[in-house]
Amino acid sequence: MNFVEERFSNLISTFEKESEEKLFKHMRDVFVTRVPIPVQESMQRFLTKYPFWGELNVKCQNFQIFQNKAKVFKQNVGDLVWLFDKLGDWQSKFVLLAVLENYFNFDFSTIQRAIEPVWNHYWDLDLLSMAKHDVIVDVGAYYGDSVTDFVRTFGKDGYGKIVCYEITEDVCKQLCENVKNFHDIEVRNLAVGDKNDKVYMVENLSSNSANQTAQSGENAVKMVTLDDDLSQKLDLIKMDIEGGEEKALLGCERHIKEEKPNLLVSVYHNNSDIFNLARLIYDMNQNYKFYLRYYGLNIYATEIVLFAL
Image (cartoon, rainbow, N blue to C red; front, side):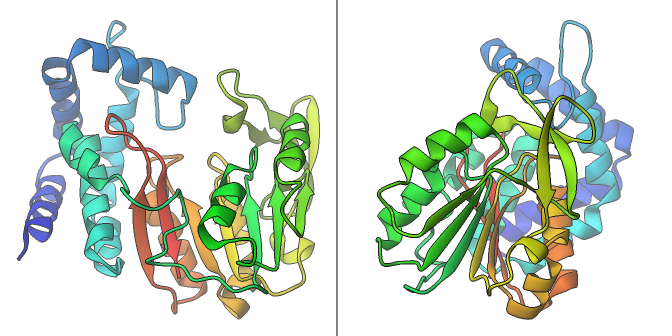
């Protein structure tokens, strides 16, 4: 048993043995007594801006995020072991270990080691190869940073067409400007989900990168499924849509089952996506192999990408 297996096994044993309440108290106590005050304050500010995982306010004794994570750890041991076993290389297994250690023990050094040191966000040349006729879909294209990094990595002849989806109209305008010098880029001001519908864009006041959709509101936007909106064969789909990834995957089930496009999916916008989305993809097509890469920082683990190839 190597050190990654041993540390993962020890962590899983803790999740199995201890009660949900003890797991929660461990996280709370370690955070309050061992994490430096400036780091505590930084995490609280971050979680106030991006409340995907739960609330955290030490002064008010509100540790909801730790209660949420304790519940996931206790109730999903089998899912975590399944994912560890399915991951296709040791870097991926180390990333999973580092993320769990960060969440449970506030281990900042291991997550620092897990940060991808070489490749641009998503575009890992050890995992991906592209061809000049490939059709790529960027769901949550934002200002075109992923498209730009793709072209820098694979070259202007590394694709045939890129279709970008983005829900925020002003962002779409800037996106079009940023990618105008690349060939065959199509920008669609649409939401992507599990049905064709009208939804509403909910603005995040801290950053429009975290805008989401809801069933009610003021800023209406059309939602489509990839299965209905794109009839051609797809070679790669990247998704980063602030917690909407599960529904977007459900909406491209036909493509996944029939064509097996490479999938690059953000799996950090709630406490269970890291294993739930891998399970969902595997249930659609068991021919996928899974990898994890980490592109975030060393305080609170975000920017975790699942590669299904």
